[in-house]
Image (cartoon, rainbow, N blue to C red):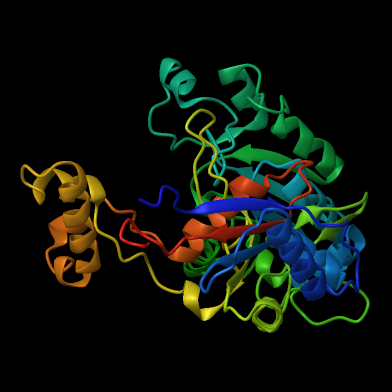
Length: 393
């Protein structure tokens, strides 16, 4: 019996620079890696490329001053509210620097006990011990410190209230509240800095008296010949680059993955699926941090990666459909049932417990875990056998 299933390999690549031919580089690296590991590439194997190198090859960078100029243009003069930014030096600090440079005065509203993606200011358990159960009260930063004492990120040790206040300087102050409407007590001009709930909060604020509301995807969202931009996501999905600048989410990703698929088919004769991936969509069970600080897991993918898995639950079927069969007889019967799974899935019980997520989110999360975000130097991931199952020979 075949004893291997899905395999994922981190593929090393050279340092990517603006204007590099990334399609050629990725194809060269994957083909060489497959040769070194004696891997026979097959139809529907997958090549995943991290968004970071796609954006770098495009030169999609912008400066803090570019952000400041666009913010000033879009919010005008006066006091501005900034609600629900995530707590991240890499993801948000440079954006905050640009916003502060572009406004006259700001009130920054942080959520608590954690931000949108789970970075904690303080543990829920500690707040419960202090008698705070509903998280519906508004605090000034001084009141919050008085209540909880020190604020320290469990992994980085950073006090984000202090860090963001330092960036704001004498232009702003920080409050803590989970009610987006609280900011309207200070100003009717608001920047929604949240990622996945931004459109809902914008609509809510406008319905309750806000005069002007923009979201992060509306900053640097116009084509420019002088700096980076992203027409759909603006500064969402950006990371700090060198001092005073950010790398934006990559543009034109569909063209890239389609071109890569064509190039690999020319070289190998097989049709691989390709995607660009960013953050995976998973939650750290210890720190409580949800990884997805990008607006999407995958901004582009080839057509074979659409949809959701069509699978039966192996354990459920083994316990309920095989009767007293053992050994080779049980194996043969399981393979038969899997081969006929399109009929079986009419009975929802046979798919009970399978993961109800899109293929691109599953593959993107797998790729993010394999490539890592540190110094592995593997911005490309080759995944073989992802669409195989127990009946595949």
